Image 1 (cartoon, rainbow, N blue to C red):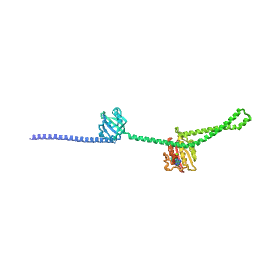
Image 2: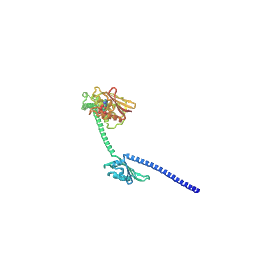
Image 3: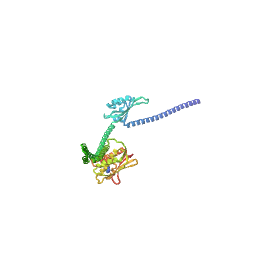
Image 4: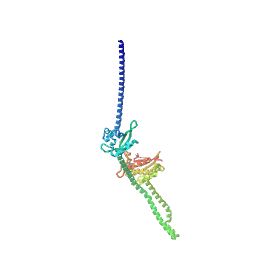
Length: 438
Ligand SMILES: Nc1ncnc2c1ncn2[C@@H]1O[C@H](COP(=O)(O)OP(=O)(O)O)[C@@H](O)[C@H]1O
Ligand SMILES: [Mg+2]
């Protein structure tokens, strides 16, 4: 009994152990299961997160995205494509991507599948059919897509809508062109206007030498006639007292002493005319001049002279430009700037009884300053910044274009200098042209 009992006991305890073992195993398996389940859920949520991330990126793309398989069937499309075509990505699934494009683009689109085997298609212009049936031009890039084993499985198309941008750009371009033309015309007409004003001064300037060249030529003609008469008398055999009388009567000795200076004077006049013509050529600015060192005094003097000569009421001018003062720039442009400044000063002093102008030049370290000061009313402080704006003028219609200072400012900059407006403490405006020194 006791054996049996002990046997039973032994049997009973081993059965129990087996059960315990099974239960423990089951516990382990269960724990594993729970572990896998947690892992799976974690992976799942990471996957969902990645999926959402990709979706949000695709949805925010302004470029169109189409992913196709090797047969050209759409596998994925983004929101930009849905918006343009008016078809949902789900509805497009498994349709041929070629359906999306207009007839005119079919040949190009047909070639994509072949082309991408050897190269990527860049910026190929194709027309997508929009929801309303009109074509939407896209700059399309197309490249091949490979799976993780490197097999070609399809292609990816990315297209940027260019129509809107291009239309806006073309419009901008056209407007810009028109504006540029208008500006060139205005600059040209201002130049013509100041040329016109200068012509009066130049005419005056030319008149002087030309009139004394004329006078001299007339005198020379008379002299020539008398000398001919005298020579005729010699050839006719007149001599002695009769010839001497003729010589006195024809004033041959006076002619001989005068003729040299007459010719010199005529030459000088001709030279003066030629110099004026050269100055004029420079002003017309047809030939490009280099930026180089030059003496300021002669340029300033000619510019001031020309304007002052043409002025109805001539101001008293004080010029203080040291003879040796030199600057780096373009003579013609400096001339043009000074003409504009002096003209403005004369305009503003027109109602005054005693118009005065002081033009000074000096060197300040690496700069050369040329200051044009008038004794007019000056510039209202609020206008000091505006006088250089194009079309800013306080003159009557037809009198001012408002471009003189604008152009002068640009010309100063063109030669590495600057132009500054200010008022003098004792009244009147001061314009300072600053150039680089030699
Ligand atoms: N010396 C000056 N004194 C006072 N105002 C001036 C002077 N120079 C220019 N201005 C002002 O600047 C404006 C613009 O000058 P500018 O560009 O030469 O054009 P415009 O002479 O055709 O008016 C003038 O209308 C005038 O109001
Ligand atoms: Mg002016």
